[in-house]
Length: 211
Image: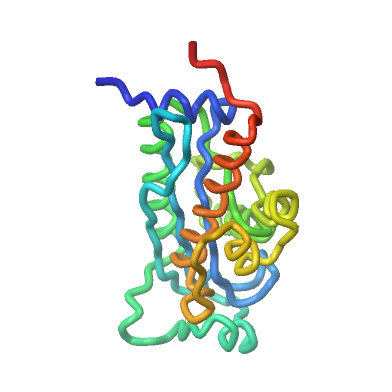
C-alpha cells in the first residue's frame, strides 16, 4: 500500500521535507562556539492533510577541538559538557547519523530535499552549516539558506515569538523545567509548527489539490 501522507507532504511543501531541529550551544557564534546537543523531529501528514510529530532523535555532542564555551551558556542550559555519563559523540558522528536519518525520510516521503524548521531558525541553521563545513561533510540534506522559522510563524498566528509563550497560546503544554534540552525544545517546536500549519488549513488556507 502506498504512503499517501508521503505524497501529500511532498506536494504541500513544494518537494521539501520539513525537519524540525534544535541545538544547544556554548554561545552565539556559529564559527567558534561548541555545539553541545542537537535534536531533530520528523513530522508526517495523515490522510486528512494534518501534520503531527512522528519521532525525535537527539545527540549529545562533544565540543570540537578549540571550541569556545561560555559559562553563561552552560548556566542557561544546565549542560555539563564533561560529565562522565553524558555519552557524547563527535560532531562528525552526530551529523553523519542525523543526515542519514533525514536522507532516508526524504526518500520514504518522496521529497527532493529537507528544509530546516526551527525557532529563530537562522541561529540553528548557522550552527549546522558551520559544523558541516568544519567536518567536511559533502552531502548536506538541508537546503543551504531556506527554512521555516516558527518564531515568525507564531508571531503571525498567535502574536507571540517566545517559544514557551507561543506554545501556551497554541494550547501546547510547555515545561520551563524541561526546556533548553535539544530534544524537548525540538518536540515542542515541532508541535507548534504542526499546529500552525493545521490551523491554517482548517481556516481555509491553501492546500494542494490531490484530485
